[in-house]
Length: 403
Length: 227
Image 1 (spheres, rainbow over the protein chains, first blue to last red):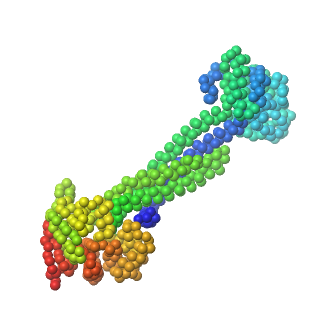
Image 2: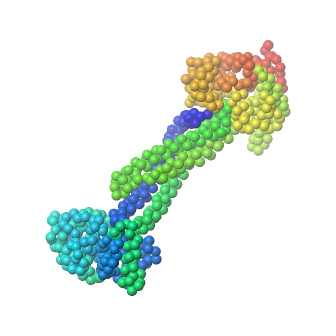
Image 3: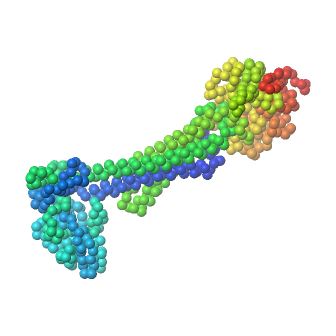
């Protein structure tokens, strides 16, 4: 008996239980779709974070005070016997040929006021190098002036959110912003950038690092962003920086240099585990769907007992009966799986539509394995009813029905 | 050629053995016409199931065309049923969602015959039982007599050597019953061994021989009493 004939026979038998059959197929579809949606969320989160890091630029190094045991991870424990200073930065920029440029980061919060409006803002003290290193761009005006490391002109650049809240109806360029009680001339507004590495760049005031130092009465830097000359020279540049700073800090290696790709790969690992876990949770629903298939199959075997007995009397072998029921189960689960794939893609598209920042695309491996598992589930859970059918005693089976 | 020797069949019902057959000896040569008769509970159906290879005897020997049935595997038994035995049941046992032609062609489906061959043979078999016009009707569009004739066509489509009919007229009125029995007899005249299980003396009396079963034991009766 050819597979196609078997299929026709099986399909005909299912017609009698349309609703039950549809529901069990729906169960499989929901299982497959949920695997796809959850994994696409996981992958979307990974894509989002990868994008965040890529936006930092691939030649980026971050120098921070304190030493961790392994250089791959961000420091959790750190002791900083020596501060990270502007002089440190100038020294390694001058001495390492592999460093193209560096920008200091001094971070603080202060009240900013313009006329009647006032609010608390984050202040970044940095230099003109910040703009190319972080690949930022201006909406209007210009960024901090070049080569004014020590002078600290009283100027500032503001994010779009601050522009909207403090200067809702006027051009802020050239006006005075009071930050922490001091006067700063606004010389530029940043183009919208959004949240990056936990900072809302639209909600910041940038000013020359020296100005920030005097404003916060602090000389130690929070971070130094470094751009290497090329991606291949990243490791060498990091080594240079550590070497220079060790020398300057009396032979103590007390800084950490983070490469953005090692951060990226650490996050990537965490997120793939997360995606896998989501897939596993969704796979449970596939198992439940399998029980649904088993249920509809057992009902159909029960109701077709007489028919199975008849087929046996007409010369159908046990293996043919087994095959017919297994085929029926796998057809059900395959249809369910196919519907689930369509639904999964549709839901992922819906997610992308509503949250465009999240590139939620079901990963190929998840689609294929969800389909394979769905068909496997059909076969596995169809096996019991199929065996029951194939082992029916024809005498007893025939006695059960009249037609 | 069927040869039964010392056949017994014991069932367990509620933990207690029920002796449906207690030792039946019977020789049925090819082309024979025999009726198995007896009141209900006498073991008629048990014997029919054994003859039809749907069941195996508890003890005793059943040799069908030189082969000991007790030694055959389940798969072999299904092959014997497919090729050597045709069943006709009291309740017809047609698959309700299939047309008459599809019902008739079912055994060919298991034998793996291609669709065209199945259709041709089914059409011929239906013509043989006088139902060529009814090929596309479903069982619920057929009368009882027509259904049973479809069942006869199905039972004979594989060219079996034995036709087993279990109360074939039990659900039919007198006229239709007579037509069906005459159809079966015409098949028998064509060379098929016809074994009819019945409690109706009017039907049993038409057979060449009768095996009367009483409490699991058989008693053979030769010749036609009506003749």
